[in-house]
Image (cartoon, rainbow, N blue to C red; front, side):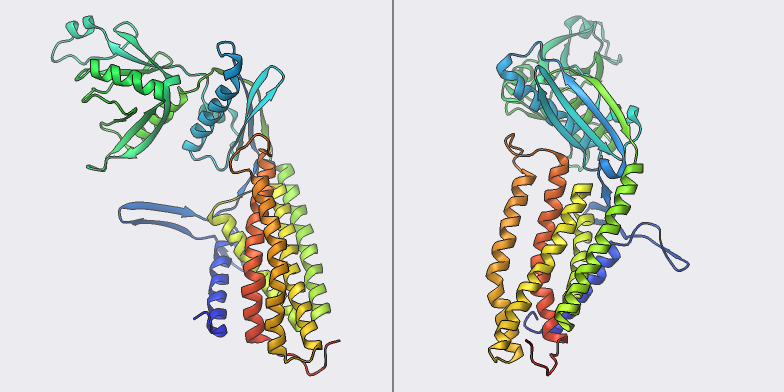
Amino acid sequence: MFKNPKRLLLILVLFAIVAAVIDIPENFKFFSTTLNPPTFDFSLFGVKIQKKFTTHLGLDLAGGTQINLEADMKEIKAEDRASALESSRQVIERRVNFFGVSEPTVQSVKSGDAYRISVELPGVTDVNEALKLIGQTAKLEFREFTEDAYKNATAEAYLFPTLDNTVAVGITGKDLKNAGLTFSSQTGEPEVAITFTPEGGKKFADVTKRLLNKQLAIFLDDFPLTWPNVSTEITDGSAVISGSFTKESGKTLALQLNAGALPVPVSVVEQKTIGATLGESSVKKSIVAGLIGLSLVALFMILKYGWLGVLADLALVMYGLLTLALYRIIPITLTLPGIAGFILSIGMAVDSNILIFERYREEERKGKPWQIAMELGFGKAWDSIRDANFTTIITSIILFNPGNWNFLPTSGLVRGFASTLFIGVVISLFTGIVVTRTLVRVLYKPSKRKTV
């Protein structure tokens, strides 16, 4: 299949059509018809799959809410404060992600004696809603019923936990590592899985051994969340809370448990709503700048290389369609630096074609037939294209900082630039070699005039 250029060209055209459909803007007017990108909503082997292809914009473009939290480190030893701050950042990030906020940015910042966490929530313009997502300082505590509570409860009585009829067992939010929604492998019903820290797991093992066939209540800010029955001794630090959960109620309980896992109390020191007016202006100017640059590049390629330049421009269109489609499929949150990374990668996509065409001309001047000269041009240009693009790929990975190392950039804007640049360079390798080569093999017919 791939040795047949015409068949490969047909596949590439189909890819381009699919990408163009995914790239359709929302409420796009086509004559009198309103078009929207496709939405997938179906079940596969019992798993419900929902996917809507939309462009996710960052805080600087879409507007949203920014909240700065300060961590109270009075009770934390100096040598443990950095790890406590990072643990709090991870808890808050997990809490926000749990409710599906699109590409939030949660960063820990240390300045002098101040330990802060910065939270950016694109698309969330209600500060009160944002505060609910993040949660105020929470106190999570595990408590057991007192003996008097069991004595005073009759067989028909519903034993409801309160601060008066329960006592603490020594397990708090600091001992909880994670809580999440899961589903029973036997019944398929929603459950809440909880995982403890190594120290918390030891405490939990002792408590479950002592409270076998009794209830263990979990309080958040002195309010009972749930009081499941301990059916077995748990020694591995992982447990499952089962019951009559719906998907939403299980999700809410997991969120509440995570809310109490903050190792240090935090308070809001700054909150602001960022409007999308500046973002709309920036997007429009970026689009105008991109169109001008793209038009100049396309014009240069046509004037310099003639019909080859036209084919290179077609490959460039294919590049744009595939890249934007990937942004929506992954999805990638576009920030203004991210758009800059996309525009930069357009130039690199054209650069590959220039190297190939110049090599082709060199081989043609040596008197070789154009088909052989073109194949040699692609082959000899590959080493330069590979080295230049791989260097950029490595740089973009470093800028993205996937390991979240402190000695590398952690800014969401820098990562946005790195992610779009990385995707753009990878796609440009594909379009520069595969797409352009296929177009040339199928559509290019050189003029009889010698190339000079």
